[in-house]
Image 1 (tube, rainbow, N blue to C red):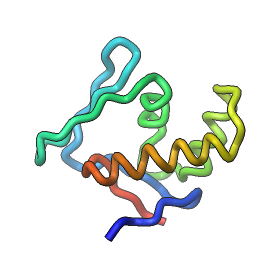
Image 2: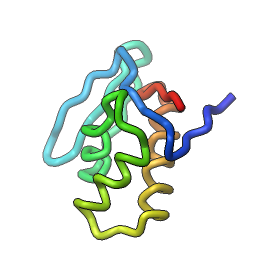
Image 3: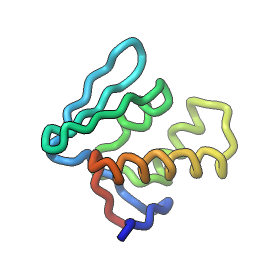
Image 4: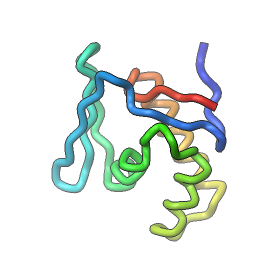
Length: 95
């Protein structure tokens, strides 16, 4: 069953995830599964805010201060990224 990710969701890096920055991007790897993903600069900025205490809503607010982006579009993109990261086992989520 897929977890519901909303503005109240608080994402947390999975315990087995390693991350590093390479040429402005972030590379995340699950040590358990060996799966990895490369995030672009915006994804990297989202990852940096993924600390287990900051909600999706707060992350969207921070991104809106950094980028010229509409709230609804930003929220949809952040939720889509967390959905993918959760499916890959790279983040845990709580509401």
